[in-house]
Length: 385
Picture (cartoon, one colour):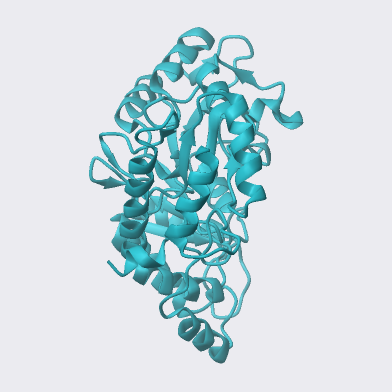
């Protein structure tokens, strides 16, 4: 019964009987104009005005000293980890309830993830679980925090702002200060989200945002590193552009860098999307309130932003009363042309991370078996209100 009501509600919202995706891009502004200009200029690769313009747009919106555009969100996170000093054999603590790219960025650096539980407040890294994990598994030495058993350095934590909902950053930052651990925000999903008035990705040592096609705005493929200081930002830009020293014609590179530059073609699309980002955020927050009202008298719990935050509600989510209801909802909604999806399988269940150190993951396991994401694209009719 609830499934039929939900399908009817969503189809009425989106005013269509066609297939409704989970999150589709919207191109309502200057996208075609800017992309066409880029093609006509022939500067479609990593050199061109739109890359600089896009970085400036992000800096102005997030109020970060320097933003460095990259080819995708994973590259942005990899770069942020590298710039924070994470190296091979280091331990990086993150949440098991995350998209696999978080762990893949660590893996390709030769670092190892350690998993802690998520918080009922945010669905992101739980400060209480982090503190308990460190008390049990770590000691503080002259080298900083290390594992008691292997003496591997615990260099960083990577909380993810799940579905755009900011984690409890004050508590996490205090723990990091006490243990001498860096904090890198996986803000892939949270462009347009604010923690106590400050944009996500700007409170930690570095932040990383994604502009994949399913994010709140897209550059087709792309990401960006948010840097806390101008100096670290300029170094990050240097590292992501193969560490090439400027010269009229010579090729000289002064450190091992990455070729992670965002193409101008993608940045042109991003510049147009940034012009309408405030409207997208407003629209998606309206949609979230409608969903919240719809589920308010039901056995399903709609996931809302924490009290301390303003979320972009990138993906709307509901928590089902039990695993059987979740399975039925997924099966029936998809059969009726409304895309719904479960949350990701926990990282320690994947073969490449099954041996990673982990703490108690009780709440992560509960969310894994109970949560469903529902359509979250901006709704045309809400934009007209």
